[in-house]
Structure formats: C-alpha cells, structure tokens
Image 1 (cartoon, helix red, strand yellow):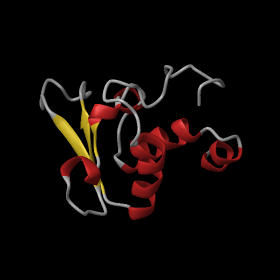
Image 2 (cartoon, one colour):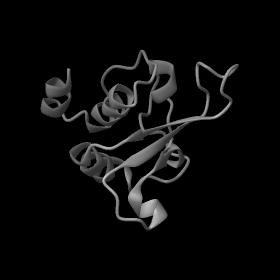
Image 3 (tube, helix red, strand yellow):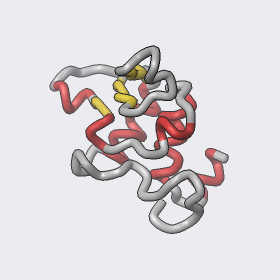
Length: 105
C-alpha cells in the first residue's frame, strides 16, 4: 500500500497512513487530523527527531479524555515535515473521509 502511495504521488494519504500505523491509531482517529493536531519540532523550537500527534476524538474517550501519541522515526518526521509543515492550522491533512479514493491526495 505504501509503495502504491509513493508511485501514485498520494503523499497526503501516505503521510496519514504512516501516522496511523506508527501511532497505533484507529482509522477514525487519524483520517480527520488537521495540521494543528501535529506538534512538529519547528512548532516547539526544539531540535528533535520525534513529533507528537493530538487525538481530538479518541475511541477510548470514556476512559481517557485527552490522548496523544509520539512518533520517533526520523525518516517519517522528514516526510511529515515535507508534506504537512506548510499547511494552515485548520487544514485537514487528508481532504476526504475514509471512503475517499483518488483526487486531492
């Protein structure tokens, strides 16, 4: 799946798939992420090889009202910065829902 994303230039879908996989998130938790949910090293002015993801509506909301994950893969961080760092804070990382295929990726 990841190879096809790269071949077809679906960089946004590949980015959220990496976040979901490495953060061990449910699809409903990562498909609707916005740029403000990512806390990149440039946002904190700290040189780091990791970034945090805020989960606004976790599936475990009745047990944990706030949830986040930390992803510490430097190669993934470079890709996420390249694809999503320039986004406005309210912009969705992926412009569709779980059933979207094709356009806008």
